[in-house]
Image 1: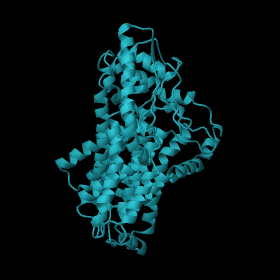
Image 2: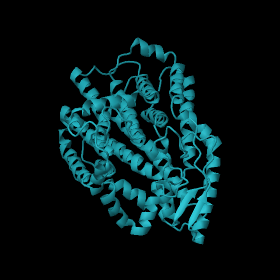
Image 3: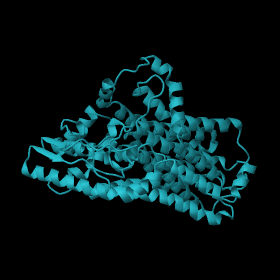
Image 4: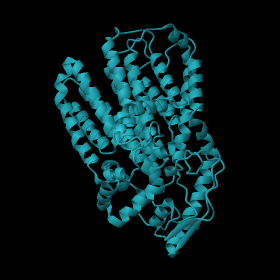
Length: 511
């Protein structure tokens, strides 16, 4: 991230540190196991067929038809019998998780590469644009994963990854392709290709979930404002209107799903009251968003990324924009990162002021926050003056290395290597033994399958679903001694066994 000669020696330390943070998370993908909704999806497909299952979920659960279709049609658990010593397609499922992880890094790189092509060249930038784009991609990936509230539901749970990571991938791909289209002045076959990719990514993102829908609306608003304030971009309004139309149509299908309204009806009433909810929406949103961004791994990542981008230039190359434009960009940045929080507060949150948001949604919001921070920082660096503080940091690059190390140690990265080396092999062995018992009960037509609980001494909660006092009930994926519990029933339904239970209560992870 730095461009001082002294950083020639510090740069490998920074890159190595970020790689050391990313590699164990990727390694844990190779030990991922199917869980709850993965079994439920496969069993529902077996009962209703592929397309019958889609209509069932649209009418009974959620309008996220693109993500749900992907999670069921591509679910390898529904491809074969349950008689093997491991679920059908286990390694295919793990390969899909690795592919999603690689796709996320790729679209982040694409977005940064397009931005660096569009923005004016900075003075003394850190080598070629592709090198800077890859460096920032690595930084966003490492610091973003480290700042996740709950890595399991975004990285290691197949249904969670498809329902939350895949919409984010589509959203970032739309932003990158749309920017590329608007930056190309003439109608060429290349431009048509980028326009098609942007439109397809937009439709898939909007049809995959409410957070992606709101994010795409924010991106469209930003693109429209940019075209309005840049006269020679006015000829792009037709493609922009096409994207807006796609968003409205696909978003209408998403929001009109009967399953959405059934879920809202089942929710508890808001203690603030029907009307007070809207009166308090803005302060509740701002307070919750501030709390999300103030977590040490998140706030540290924001500061490291912003300062790191600023350090890639040694002086201003453009005059400072008008104050109104700066305020508009900052207001857009704040509004974009509050959209998802506001939606949750308006639709689902039931507290008076602040309630903990679902961690699987916070994961997405944090990654969007870090990416938008880098986008704004790349715009700012072209007119940011060479201050004394930045010059002082340029002369001391090891401070940035130490700052990155501190941020990584404050988040999830400190658990990744111990869990990969000390827990993952035992997790694989114990789950393999459990699968053999379930498959044997399935083959024999037994009325009950009794399996032992998981005993994982070094589990830190990244990969293994070990219950704990601080864990949310909806992500406690371990089985119970009572076969009527939801997790037990879903697994029993998949294996066509009347009752699946543990021999003893699950082991609680110590905090």
